[in-house]
Length: 477
Ligand code: F6P
Ligand code: MG
Figure 1 (cartoon, rainbow, N blue to C red):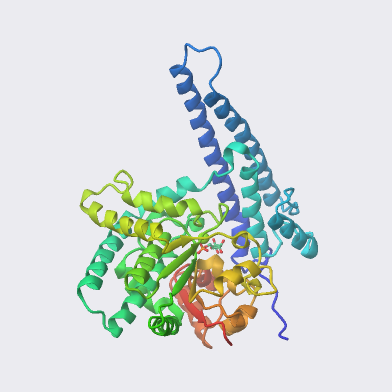
Figure 2: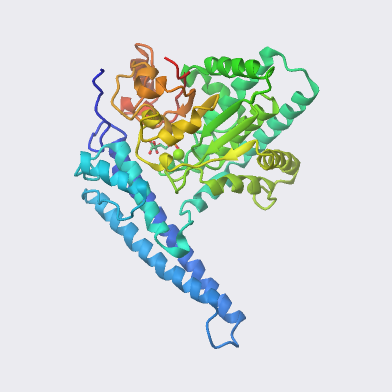
């Protein structure tokens, strides 16, 4: 039995948890308040318009009553959100959930077990999940706001601003589709394509909205595109990609003669450009017949600002086909065929969407096992031939956000998941302290390099999003 290190804490000055809880979360919460305010203002205008239209009637229309209800409820949401912001800033204790949903009771139980906790000293991962889930309950408690996503505006704006990267990738996909139709794909080119499209999906993660509090949309744009990916290759600190590929290919070769299907799953991260990049990878997997079905797993509630919600999946399809969203006519045909392909796979049941409350729980992924809190997810994912975990948060949950020495083997850090039968591939650009699987000496080199680049804090390389890890576990040892 190994003794586990402790979790990263919000009160640790040397961790990215410190500025996260003190600067980033307050500004994220403020942006929610602004967003709700804006929606209320729009609703006021909608009422005026409705009144003008039906001025001859004496009774307010049902529509108007609903709008008024929405405004009143919106004010309640703002009051609760403001209270949470004050609690956070004043380092008040985390207040248990009032709801009775199973996952909320589960949060409360854990809080009672490890708490009481205060916002600025609590374990980072637990309190961050707690905060986002708490925020979500303010909306779901109000009839007219149940499905409201307070980050939707930001998501759309950032996606629009990514148009150059979108055009470039849609064009690349067009070439790929042509290549797959007209050429016999050699094993070597198949392997290279797999690398290229995982790489696209990996670096798609560098652009995440929760970091927009200190990164501009222009910075994000500069992270998209083939040239930058090539330059970044050296920044992939661990790369198990070939192992994942071999494993998937072996499965493909074993199943083809007996007519069985190959299934790949994506535990998604962010909407917008990242998810678009993921769908390029998904189209490649399906078009090349490396996989027969792909199941994507979005979140049930607005999560870490930019994470994909079920609705964002369909929204991606419609944004791509919408000439008012991506306006440049010369790219229209490429985007349309990309979107049509996605819609077709979705309609044919080859691209499926599946949710679970587990993804918005606080649990680490070593609970994905027959006797763990993620039992239901285990039941599902054990039938997958490869489960791709996208992004930083999923990775933190994989390796439990504990203060591991950075040379800890990945399989040690993922605990029971290493022997759960689940084939794990994690594509992560590093935006938080926790990192494992590095060779001896690499950490010291990175610190040196980061300081040479003109940064004061040598530890900051780990939350710059400039480095990445691609790690694999076949689930069997
Ligand atoms: O560390 C910064 C952070 O915003 C964390 O809050 C969170 O773990 C993560 O990055 C979100 O990034 P991603 O969208 O890649 O999971
Ligand atoms: Mg995210």
